Image (cartoon, rainbow, N blue to C red; front, top):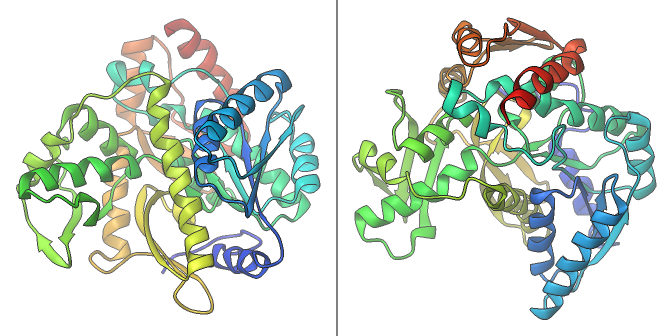
Length: 398
C-alpha cells in the first residue's frame, strides 16, 4: 500500500476539488520559472487552443519574461492557436518563501509547475555523466527551490496540484521523508524513455500506429540516461511489459534498448521532452476531469516514492482516482527495481529527511573532481551542500 504522507490534501482530493470548480471558472495554471522548460511548456499550452485555462508565468526577471511571453503569444497567433490569457508575475524570488507565498496567495492556482532551477542555464548532466556517470550528486540543487515553493504552498493552505521537473525520483521522496509537503507528480526521466521504446518496438514488429503500443515500466532516472545514451542497461534486468491491442509482445529487449540509442541534441532543445512531459500530465488531469477518461502516465516521485512508476488517472467514475498501476507488477517489485536503479545514480538511501550518497559516488567525485563529497546530506544542510556543489564542482568544470 502506498503511504501518501503528510500532504494537507491527498492528490485525489485535489483533483476532485478541481473537478468541482471547472464548471464555474477557468483552470489556473502557474509556471514557476520561465527558462527553456517553462517556455516550451507555455508554447505547448497555447497550442492546445484552450479558452478555459489561464496561465500565470512567475519569476524574477520582468524584462526576460515579457520578451519570452511575447514571442510565444505572437507565434501562437500566427498559427491561429492563441486562445489563452497569460499573466506575468515578476519579482518573485524563489530563494525566499515569503515572496513565493504572496504569489500563490494572490493568484490561487489550480496547477503549479515548478521549472525553476537553482543554477540556471546549465544541464547538470553535461558535467556529471562523462566524469562520474551519476546524476544523484545534484539532488541538493534540484530540491532547493521546490523546498521553498512547498513551504510557501503549505503556509497559504493551497490545494493546487503540483508538478516538479527536476530529479523528482529523489527530490519528492526527500521532501516526504522530511515530513514536508511535497509535489504530486514528477515529470520527465522515465517518461522520456517510453517513446523511444515505442518507436523501437514498432520498428521491430512493423507496427504503423506506434502510439498504440502500451508500455508499463518502472525504473529510475539512471536507466533513462544509460539506455538513451548507450543503448544498454548496465546488466540490470528491467521491469517492463509491452502490449499491442492487449496482446503481449516479447521482443529481444537487449535489441530494443540498443535501438533506443538515437541521436538527440545535448543543449536546451532537450528540454522539449521535459516540457512535453509536463504538458502530458496537465492534459491527463484535464482529460480525466472534463471527459471522464482513464489516462496512463509514467512519472517519477509519485506519492513520494523513490524512482519512476506507471500511474493511472481514472476519471470514469464520479470520484477521480489516481493509483500506481499494478496490473503487471506489484508495488514491492517496482520499489525494489527503482532502488536498484537509483543506486547506480549515486543514491544509496533516503530516509527521515536525510539523503545518503553511495560510497562509489564519493570515490568517483574524489577522482574526477578532487573533492570530498559528504556521505549524507541532512535536510537542514541542503543550502550549504548546494553551494558546495556550485563552487567546488560546477564553477570549476563549466
